[in-house]
Length: 499
View 1 (cartoon, rainbow, N blue to C red):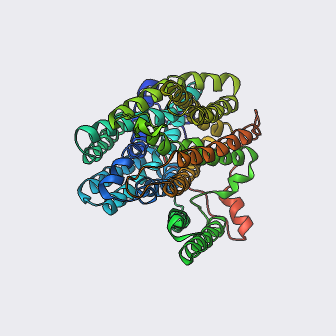
View 2 (cartoon, rainbow, N blue to C red; view 1 turned 45 degrees about the horizontal axis):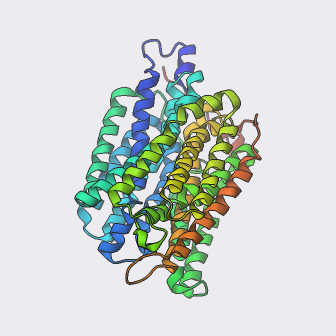
View 3 (cartoon, rainbow, N blue to C red; view 1 turned 135 degrees about the vertical axis):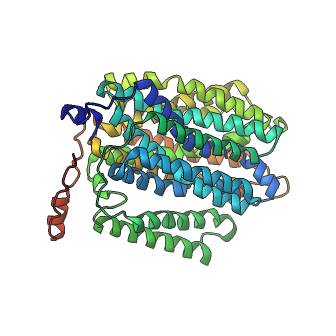
């Protein structure tokens, strides 16, 4: 129940709603933890490849491991937040993310870094929880702008991740990146405790879907592990076929279980709603494309020497500063995106953002070595990402009830993170196949092939987004009584409301 609902019933006469600026600030800070932990590693990949003497497909697991756990954490965190209290769950998630940073810091090997990154991946729950808390504590007319700013904050966090990681790598060591992320998680947790009021929801008696939460990342990991090793094993190898088959079988079992269990980690029946199905499809296509696929090749373009003909010769710090500036330019459009979404509908802003990201790709492909053109393309991409991230929660909110905000947003985070995981794996396969084993340099042909794949997915995302309705039919979740009738079991007694 939201603050507005509680006030109407007179339940919250003594509690005061926190101000719009305060809520937006602390929720942005929390979301920054998740986005920073993801983005800080992209600029670090070339350094890790050299330090640990591994290929691109191997080192990509520092990103993939985070995204896989993040996918499961997104839906489980959102679900737990709706059932047991979003503020409480957010604080727990931030503490776990802090522990993951420490694990990567003290590990000393690539394997331990990957393990720590997997623990950090629990931060994937933060975005869905943030959207739910925003909708719970903001006035209705302020929600579009608020969630737009929170959603687009991932862009600023990405900028900060690239900037801080680049400077630390050049001046010190990659170890300091994890110290910074650990401190950031603690600061965000303290801010949530100080600003966001205690949860008012009565803890649910529903059993958590732990099996579904485990099966999902296991299935995705098996499939991505098969893809990441295909450049060495081949598509016809026993290793590839075995891992792929295992992943697909586990995925099928997961779908069967989610449709059967009483309180699923992912309510697959929401996909019967046309608007939600199209939003999720456009999200995963964008994640496979420009959201997840452009980061690694763009970092290579920036940091490769100019003597190659397509490199720009940036240092890691310069590349970080450049990424930060383009992201800031994009983020400046997020409040405007929220206002446009409130006036003209989130659908139009969503389509505009996806289109800008798609336009940036051919600009890069056709102007290798041209710094000005590259800057223009990345600025367009930054604006596109900001508008897309800002419009996405508003598109979802138009089609879901308030009580299921975090669950649905968490599911969307899961879809996006799985898409980004796949994009990283696919891109790594392509780049590794064009990589010189001695110099670890990827040829221009490999960069182009990677970007063309990203462009194809970007165009597909725009096409799907065009099918969205301006005034969608809202999804009506199945009640416990309806679920019991469908399964032929006795309906549970309704919980008694507390005083």
